[in-house]
Image (cartoon, rainbow, N blue to C red; front, side):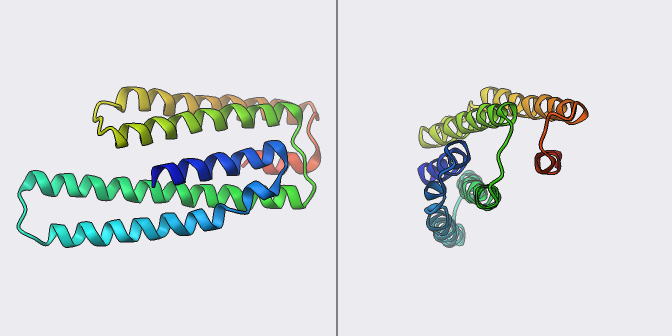
Length: 169
């Protein structure tokens, strides 16, 4: 499930960089697979929880359910990104070179975060929080810096009119 979410995210964000909507063509199938996996996993875990289990097992099952839900949410977010990218490509909209560079950098950092989390879930490593928090903080800091840089470009009128409205949200 994690590999599907990672591949979906990577294909979707790379579609804008290379302006290839073919990379977007598989997002819906992958999102459907993630939705189905999440439902099947949740149904199974609920059945297991209804058996006589000890508190530790119950906590583990709840944790597995949260992981499944979170991986499915990654698919939902990638779906939103895919829809926006499809509109960008279909409308013939182009980012400035700086905006595209920012997009590539922050997408790469998010992809690193996803890879870390998915790998550590597979390895059942419970000590990933410090590194995960660092990556999330990096993404948040990048987003703020990039937004500020974009505002500066807007003030200097170095952005196309369409880019102005799109990137300030």
